[in-house]
Image: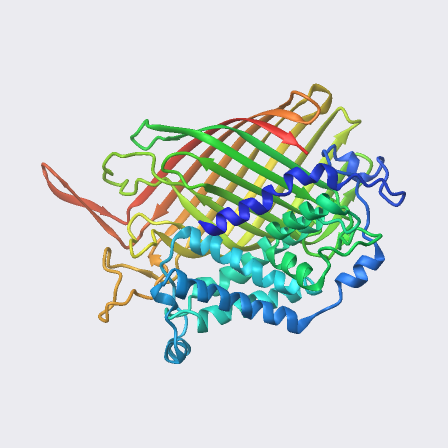
Length: 530
């Protein structure tokens, strides 16, 4: 939970500063007639390139400082777990370290939020130890790998985790680069006084490791003639939504829950760069939060970061690019039903799902017709290196999901009519995961020594589908009314499980059950574009 709160504060700290952050109107900034403004996106400010002096300073590498910060963060976190929380796993010794190396890696049984979000967030700290000390995207990933390996092998008395050594550095790079570039937007070394303090504080919350480095090096209060941003002022769209949300779980149950939902959406960079190999020059970030009884605070996080791209079409009206993208997806829900589960519906939770490590190719298309209307569409096909999906049977310690690998397909189309203040669109996400180290003995997940088995969960394959319909109407210049309808469907097949069913006529059952669950979510929100 603490990771969710810190992450939330970091992203929200962008909001009060953004409007002032881009008051720049330097002559080198791109004119209104640039390709950026043909997209009709509402930018926080006019894009400007970075200053060459800032680039020279920020690209200077400091290896020993980055390495010390990576190790120091692990030691500090271990000390908190050992002496404050007094967690059993933190009572380490040379013997536990040697045992970890002797035994090797296995699948762990932590909460979905811990494995799918908290560990990648920790990975972003390791990643930004390198990134804020002059290293590029790929080089900083090595610090994330090293930090994760140090923790897994040395800092816990539990056996090192297979899923953590994958999710922490890969998911950490996705979250870390988003936070690093977001902090870069906030900072301005030309500012002074209260404004400077506010910027530095907000940047520290967004990217703690970068904020720490700015303090120990004196950059946090040094006044310069340039902004100090490594990426200048990129084209950035920020939208914040707030309003009621209703959830309906309709598997033999018509109960519903209502509450308040908030969303933040960031689109960073040029969708249609001609040819680029710089990771995350373009990315999109979406986070949903719910204040609703029985539901998790953090219900969704989605990151799509472009690693490289090539322009296929570049005309006055039409743009199309082909790119390689990294994806990070996290969906979480909890039960809204208090009824007893029925046959072939043993789990009361609609879905839990995450893919902290996923990569694939994608097409983005946009056509604009004389600023009268615009249509944009996208399609992605991805390999899921590691993901997790809710299990109906696996229950050990905190885990109620199966690990797996597979693929995902994403696509969507949006139609905009700016002069009529209206836009409408639909999106689809489909994920398929296969467990390749599952278990058959339902309900028995420990070995002869009493320790949990080294398995991914049930022997199964599962699918998760999210369909979304959304409509927006502009009320004022930057304020929109938003309607959103989501359908979430989980489909799980357990080919080797026998599910017994006792009725008045006798005992029967199903071999290889297929279990589905559905949930519908409706939002009616106000959306403000900064």
